[in-house]
Amino acid sequence: MRLLITGGAGFIGANFVHYWARRHDGDRLVVLDALTYAGNRASLPELDEGRLRFVQGDIRQQADVEALLREEEIDTIVHFAAESHVDRSIAGPEHCVAVNVLGTLSLLEAARCVWLGEDRVAHRFHHVSTDEVYGSLSAGQPAFTETTPYAPNSPYAASKAAADHLVRAYHETYGLATTISNCSINYGPYHFPEKLIPLFIVNLLEGRDLPVYGEGINVRDWLHVDDHCRGIESILAAGSAGELYNVGSRNERGNLEVVKELCKAVDVAFAADSDLATRFPAAPPAHGAECASRIRFVRDRPGHDLRYAIDPSKLEKELGFAAEVDFASGLRQTVQWYLAHETWWRAILARGSYREWVDRQYGDAEEASA
Image 1 (cartoon, rainbow, N blue to C red):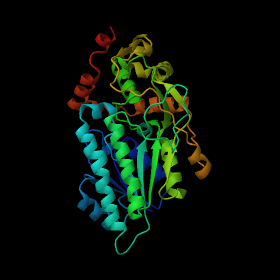
Image 2 (spheres, rainbow, N blue to C red):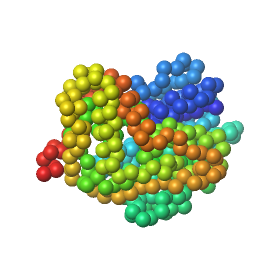
Image 3 (cartoon, one colour):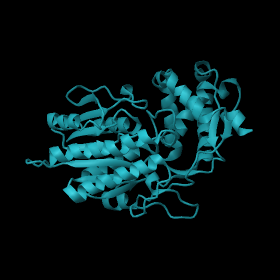
Image 4 (tube, rainbow, N blue to C red):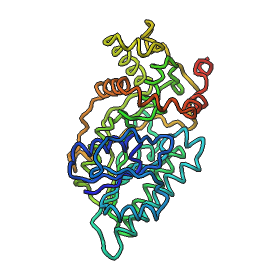
């Protein structure tokens, strides 16, 4: 296979590149990424030029994408590129729509022009979406299935829903061989530290507070990024064109529960390795305190969905997918990754724009919790 991976320097995209390179030695991987705030060239593996090519570019530049598809003889697109943070979409919905909707449209048009021209090419266009397109669940409702009506509640979710509809329309209208996956919330290595788990790991190591929205009762289905990559792999291998598949791990947990488990994992790591107190002297365990002492409750996010839950039965029954990483071990592995890759996240924190955004978004946690 010759794959174009859009957004391949982002969190899930970079993990997919690592995963695919480990499991598919003979495949050609071309990463297209605009390297905006969350894209990080350092997240990609060091592979020889025959296996991996990185191209800095914008998916909205259709002519450039068409040229790349032809030059590299791409037969598979895995489309991760997106503005994926809800808070940023609330602050700037126009940019979110421009990238997620118009960017996907441009990419689809490029694929249609190249793959469905006079010399039709066997191909697959896989679009990576989110459970947030389905809206919010109450405590007793069944998990989202592929037939759950879309009901997005944030600009981010609405933009992804629009992109999903465009992908489906290109299959129905033009015959483009598309598939869509809607995944639950991911965690794992190379995660830009603005989302809950990486943000809180970094905050603990820096001795900062842990700002929990509202009362921390919002529930998510947590999926390790390797399991997500495994799910996409199964769809590319055997998924039917025109189909949508939910990727989840049946692992629902409230945000406050996740934060407390994360705190325990960091406490345990410090207890097992005395050198950590020297490396991270501001962390609570370095001076005898528990990490949970830094939890602070802040004003809730507007339109904060109460619960997401994915039913992956279709993917399990039709394609044999099964999530393999349990949350406790996956969380420990994630903590250990951030402890071992301080240089990676320190480089992000060194950007003034990153810390300014986090401080502006969450404000002073102690003041907000009063």
